[in-house]
Image 1 (tube, rainbow, N blue to C red):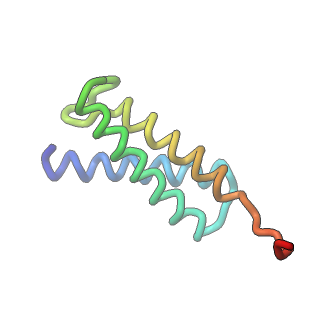
Image 2 (cartoon, rainbow, N blue to C red; image 1 turned 90 degrees about the vertical axis):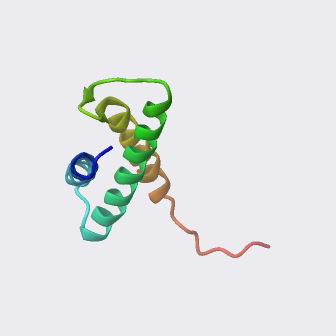
Length: 91
């Protein structure tokens, strides 16, 4: 993958993170969290796509697998981010 295509992939991943944050109605710290999750998920999806599956290719970028990875990471990360600590101490 060339440098321009890697930048395009990063921009697409950050776009998905920003859209997810806007849909969820979160603030700035959550935006950074979603950017990280989306970029990591997109990268994992691209790595999985390099080995076997090609879905929606966009030049050297396997867009479909990147979107699936990003969506999975965002969904699981949002679910795990909602876990609240309780103030109770174990007995």
